[in-house]
Amino acid sequence: MRSRALPARAAVALAVALCAASALPAGPPAHAAELDTLAPLTQRALRSYEPTGIAVDGGPDPARAAALVPGSYLDELTDKQVKYYSVDVPAGYTAYVSGTTVSKVKGLEALDVKQLGERGNSFCASDTGFDQDLSKVVTASVRWTASGAGGNGCGRPGRQVFSVTRRGTGPPVPLEVEVLLEPQALDKGPAEADIARYTEPGGAAQPVIGGGSFAAATTLPGSGHYTDTIAPGEWAFFRVRLDWGQSLAFQTRVGGGKELTRVQTHFYNPIRKQLAQDAWGVHDTEHIFAKGMDPFATRPVRFLNRSDGQQEVADMLPGWYYIAVAAQGEGESRSLAVDVSVAGTKEPGPVYAPGGQAPDSAHGSNPPASAPATKTPTRTQRDLAHSSAKDEESAAFGGPLVWAGGVAAAILLGAGLTVLLLRRRPSRDT
Image: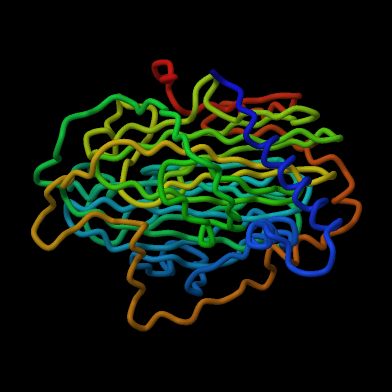
């Protein structure tokens, strides 16, 4: 059972309600409360990504790397610029570091995050994110553990250096940097578990308005059908809280329209690592964005479910799991629905070393006591929206291939593309 008519019904109900309201005599209609609820969905301003974080200026070389503690930071990158940061990682701890850039200029936007060891002269771990659409949000993340093993400085406790490199086009872009630290686990908790199975949430649709960024993501309180609208050029972010033992399965649905609109659904874990993506051109009929024929899904959040043998979700942590929907091009707004199924019961989780607790994006991070105020970068996403008209009107898909690890990663931009970073799971429940 794949297709559902919920968004179409919601759209019809909205049109009928608005037409009826215009035909009524003066005075509040009997269904005024319902119209007041729907009004924000039809009268809201266009969403834009507003970067947030504690002001920081990454160093120009490893020796002058900016020292960070767990928290959210905001910097800026020009094309081909490299900035350096350092994190003090105690023995046995695991550090998670991610970068996010936002841009609205035609061409390729790529972001490299690398761990470079204690002196900044080793190659320990790396990740690359890239996008070639016009409106882009690009993430990349790395993790490393101060295990004490290895002779190149990668596993030693203490100062660890990482770099963030931008490969893009256009003016400087804001860079959000996230840092999390996880203590050593003395007891890793329950055994591995299978990937979740989507269960039809049931119930009436709940109108929501997605946020324009990770920081402003709208909280979806649990299983259910949530409806919104999305206009070309927008990103709509939603977040779902998962505790130890819980899992998430979901799909998104975008309604048809008069013109072809390219739409993507992105799925991220608490350190903004992209777990999966589905992209398609939506025309005159509703399209369901999912993992192949099945909804996106995670395993239960368990320490042992992050092993190398589990490909569905890496670095499983409690906290916010993000769903983002982006629409490209021009044309009318479309109906948007997010169908969410949260399963599993809360578990105690692993036992950490004395004084340690799991990093949890749902509870935020504690910035340093002397942290400066949040800043707005020199060029925000709002500024980037006013880039040259020539860039805006040109096709956004003409850039080169991306080379990562010696392998060309071509972005295939046909009528439909599904990038599946999750391993196939058993068929869903009906």
